Image (cartoon, rainbow, N blue to C red; front, side, top):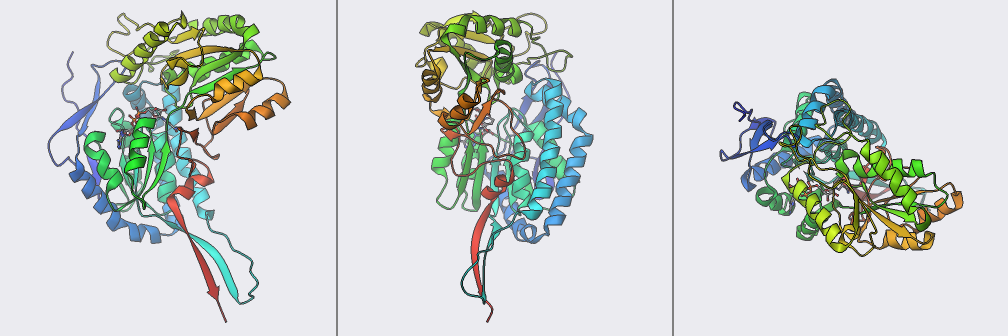
Amino acid sequence: MLQTNVKEYRNYINSEWTAGANSETFESINPADTTDILGKFPASTAVEIEQAISSAQAAFKEWAATSPSKRAAILNKAADLLEERADEIGEELTREEGKIITAAKGEVKRSAQTLRYYAVEGLSFTGETFPNDDPNMDVYTEREPLGVVSVITPWNFPISIPARKIAPALMTGNTVVFKPSSDTPLTAYRFVEALDEAGIPKGVINFVTGKSSQVGDSLVTHPAIRAVTFTGSTGAGEDIHRKASLTTRTQMELGGKNPLIVMDDADLDHAAQLAVNGGFSLTGQACTGTSRVIVMKSMVEAFQEKLIEKTEALTIANGLKEGTKIGPLANQKQLDNVLNYINIGKEEGAELVYGGERLAGADYDNGYFVEPAIFTNVTPNMRIAQEEIFGPVIAIIAAEDYEEAIQIANDVEYGLAASIVTNDIKQAKRFTKDIEAGTVKVNRTTTGNLINAPFGGLKKSSTSTFRESGRVGMEFFTQIKTVYIGHS
Ligand code: NAD
């Protein structure tokens, strides 16, 4: 049944909720049930981006001079509001992005924690002092905010990724123009709404929805933009990085092709569980998701059996339903892409030993549901072993020994996350050195990272200059001045 009375949401510019300059809108649609429309949002253009940037520019001086404790109080108040609304926003997040409800509520709470974390860490984020031979001179560095920063985010963590970018940007005194993914504008809107209600001053945060083809370039190339923090696909990240001028900093958090290596001393049950959790939870739509499992040759069959057994037990359904472990893919493009890669795998000669079909039936017909897919007999040069699929597809690759496993693991253009399953501490330590990845784990899933530890990738998974999360997450948003004060 066609939905009527769909609510229209607005941009947030200079503390006002405003409609777009033209009357065009786009819809946010539930990927588990495409008849469910969450809202309409302005299909903005460069005009609204210009307004948002002007508003952020006008607000910058005063916000940069606002005391850290005042900034922290606003972040903490917004965190209180998000925590109070975690159930409500979590439900919307599941309806908008598809992930299961426990994960969605957890994501909202994590976003509140991120605001609180930076509200504390920002109070002691400072420069250094330098000893020198002149007793009448002090030398120290000061950290200053950059100015107006663009925040561009994907749909897969529609509130926690904005939080881990916006919280450090604001806490260090920058003003923000935020453009969320057009698949998940409502969840992003809730984050901005919380900051608004927490009393963020006029112009400090601005929120503009719209297609990247309409608003993307202005967010990157406008001369007032001092930095662009972006999370998304490697292709888009490369495009933005190329377009940014010399005076615009970029932080690009991009794709991955993350390996889990299973050594011959591994507990196979544990290893299979790590693969299932890393590869199939969040419907495989995590940048750090496990997409390659590199298993010692002698154990491939036994591992495969365990993996299939655990995968069969996963309930695939609308993420709002209790007991669901795998929700839908996030949109039609994702569904087409995943099904296309499953075909590519078959054509390349890999053996599809489990799943890979689009699901049909009353519970599935209106959504983008696909069975998780497990391929064996995958060779390292196949496209399904090289390219990011960003869906619930695991490629099992056999390796003769550790040396071959590490060579396979590193032989891709990405370097985001990687893990090894072993009880041999020497082997594990060696792995942490040999692997080309920004997030390296032992006996844990490739997915998941702490708020208080740095996060980012190597090779084509990130710009290598600045990390997100943790204290270093604030470095991107500040510049250093070195001060010499002679006092006699
Ligand atoms: P995407 O690149 O299509 O879009 C991400 C955001 O960028 C969206 O808001 C989009 O509108 C905007 N955008 C796209 N092209 C742009 C351009 N040329 N100029 C300006 N803005 C542009 O990615 P997606 O489909 O939303 O997300 C999935 C991708 O995100 C995957 O590749 C995944 O690996 C990656 N990802 C990376 C991380 C990480 O931390 N490394 C985390 C989550 C997701």
